[in-house]
Image 1 (tube, rainbow, N blue to C red):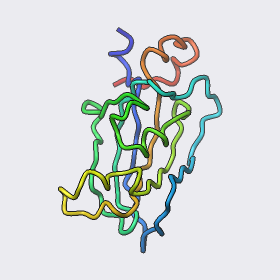
Image 2: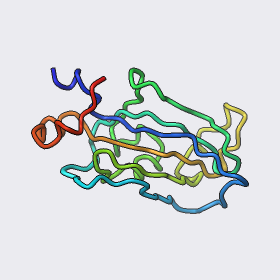
Image 3: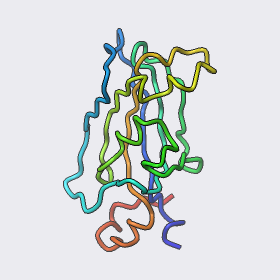
Image 4: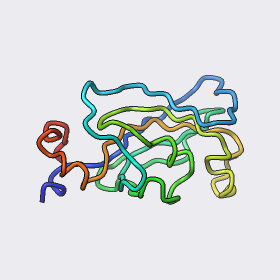
Length: 152
């Protein structure tokens, strides 16, 4: 299958260390850091995404979570409440290969999940993300997307 031969849906995130940290925000801050010249499809509610990411606390840059190996990508359905609200909102309408930085307020992040890691999730956290979209949608657009797929 083509879907097995290619990394068809992933999000890439790099650690973001902020000297002195960022001030808290009450709303999700989405910054596009790269947008491809061609954008035939975008991620939508209900798309099955697989992602690589690194999460850091905005206040001090401490890395609290990561999935960096494409063979162990984190998979979820966008908009289904399977991930934090900041991701469900912040990963919508991304182009294939687009990169974003998400500054996620605690209300849309992990504050409700407690403090199992010994970190304060009452502060904002950051994710830098790069996404493709779901396999079914990509296969429907296969002729236009073939050059955008990356062999595993």
